[in-house]
Image (cartoon, rainbow, N blue to C red; front, side, top):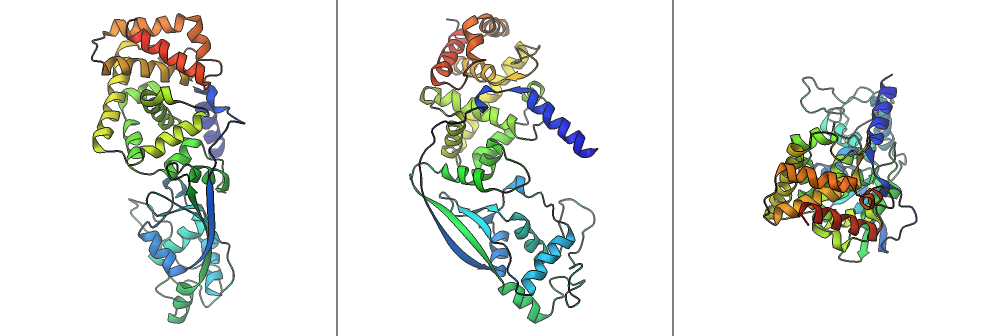
Length: 368
């Protein structure tokens, strides 16, 4: 029943957002020069790198699903010197750290066993000691610390092979790691573009999106937090379009990914500017229009949201005083425009259509 309820919730969330730009099959993407190499890590070295975050497991991938028996059997294989599946890593150009693309369950099992606690949950009152279960008698019921000295050394020296991929060029565009993650991650479900961005470009910009996503007026307009991070992506889309819509090129997914990459470690000044322009714009809309904002139908229309948000944001940054009634009238005039209706419902990611849509919205809120 829980799985059915969860599926219903996901379907409802997807139906609640109208984004025609998601259908971008066959679009042109950048070309990259990628190298890969193999490296053998001893288990002790892997665990140390995990603790130091030199090998990084994306936050949303930390959902540990292995049972104690599965994790125990994996540890047992290493203790017995048996071969185990390799892991797949991608080296981050900006930090030098390695992002785990495939192998997170194995790596977390090792980390937890060395820690002595099985699947630790933050804030939990009780801890489950990681004792090997349903394994050979020599290891049964033992923690890492309780292993015989020889067995512990054998485990620490056991080797796990890793394949590491690294982008060599272009040097000013590291979006290949996004595409590598998209294609090679073997998790239980296909990840959305925004989930991958959050994994690959973890940093100040992602922190900003998460902070903005908690703003009460935004939550009232969008609704509950989206399980697939669509709310985060809409914030990203507004910030990208507000700053660079004149530079927009298809596909939309690539445009947003590059903007996320370029702003990964944005300055404190830019952080505050982005936060304030979103906050001021969404608050203005929230107090001016209280009925089905950005929803010409049941679903939130992404093209309508992005263009109106940019239009009002440009008005606010130009220091023009605009009243709530003027905002409402400008918004309604756009919705009544046949041309604008077509631009928010057909080929919304087309370059010409997008730029024309932005021009109409900017002019509407500028009072022209």
